[in-house]
Image 1 (spheres, rainbow, N blue to C red):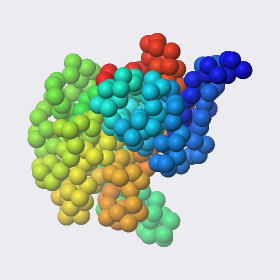
Image 2 (image 1 turned 180 degrees about the vertical axis):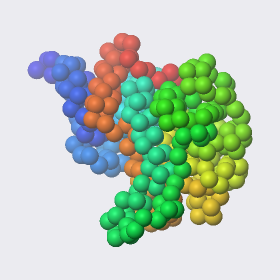
Image 3 (image 1 turned 45 degrees about the horizontal axis):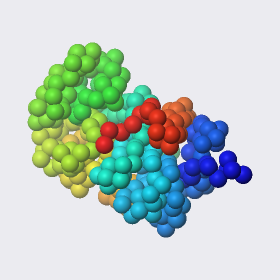
Length: 328
């Protein structure tokens, strides 16, 4: 009974892969309270659930702000998020309270890079349109220009943000016969040499690239970065792909660029908001392919993420070094 009283309360805001729950349940350190659903936890239940918690394990869709931290109370030691992004966390407030934060970088790099390449190819080669034509009877005789798209061979690819994921995307694209690879960011990256990457200004990148791939972090500087001004500088035959954060793109400006023929096509794995309303104008465009934020959605990646997230949380509870701690 005494041991039970000493267990630290952990609140998990959603069902997570069993690898993560196993780590928590076998630790002997905590008593786990779980919102046992695949759907987001309602705000009132979140505030009630975190009450008295020593640790919170959350998802990207959970807004962890001052209200949640206040509801948790003085016991709160650690917040561990099952994500690389942390714009859902009130970092300033969390830092002020002395609460540590764990996150899951690196482990989803390969899966996200693979999905980005798949989305680029699906968009450029009009694969969803082709599937639909087969299903609705639009496939008749062979036509020389029917469903023609754009190929990577001999092309110029521009990557906005050559971090871990950006570099992994570039590595995968090079074998397709990409002629030039441009990248933009705050500074040039030594690792760009691995993919023969050429550092360029954003203006030059978007004006010279056949494919523009966004893989930067969401910051005050990058919010709304991809707007009317940027799209107006792109080639009319260019394909735009975003697998970073939805808020990096001004979606109204993107819709205008796509519907007016300013750019050829766009592929998005991230939107604002998420999920995107089914009546959103972007969903009515044939030249816009939208996925439901599945960049890291492989069984192995999600399992590794959950395990890392759980280990980050346990480290925060015990005051030891986290495998992946966010520097606040």
